[in-house]
Image (cartoon, rainbow, N blue to C red; front, top):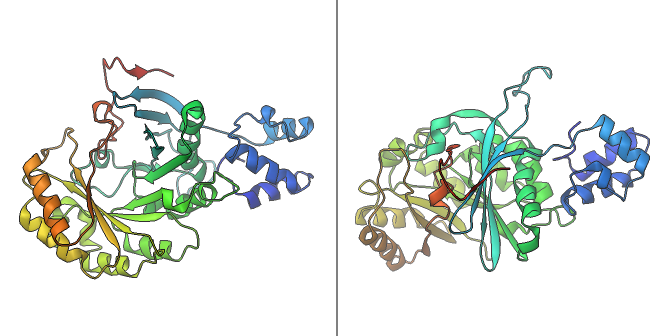
Length: 363
């Protein structure tokens, strides 16, 4: 049994099954998610004999850091090697090959932000995103999702600020791995677990309408961000083929019904592709799409270069797009991605090895 990713209730049940008091599960839960202790022998709150038995009968697995790529802006891209995990619906003995995923740690003066993956690869096939070139390899387990937060926090513990933000914007579509993602989120958002505030955790989706509706029914959930990236169905069908299944009318209806707190905004992310979706008319259409949705904001993200046949927007078009949304009363922010020099920016996560990079740090 793998311990990382297990809930408090699951750990309590495990301890009872091993003839230990249930409260031992509480102690183990705290050791994993609050104290971030990943060596069972070091969990001093548990009796030595029980630690030895846990070490024999369970596993506690962190991804192996294949490589760390340190950006000139302080960001670190982690290339992580995962262990084997069963294919969905496959017999327990059958396992897939190990997979690689990426996470990005981005420190700043007032907070640190960690961008994590929820799948190895991605099946959604957004045409401007390099992760799409990988296809879907497999879903990540709750422990593999949590580890991408816990590992950087542990490594950078001496320089952490009080606020940690987590964004589910790495590889994969979170709502296509709903159960595992939410199992991880419940631990991440538990005040007695990792303890992050829901307002500091954001789940980004390409627009999986049934997943959005399911997320809306969760009592404890992260903030929602919609990866929009187009101003019309015709445009979005090309850039994001998932739109053919969940067109804008259905997507925006789900957004309209999504519950929000009194100060909570629904975020729309819009990747600006030079000469494709960055015109003044695009901006006006986006403003019309936002009408009637309640509290929303738009994050404009200039496209980050890679091996795909698109180009960065020019500053004139970025500024014009921004200005038009403001004039239409839409809160808008232009977000320039960090970590571009080590392929850690939005849309660049494709397991790229940055060769001859003097800032790369081997494990």
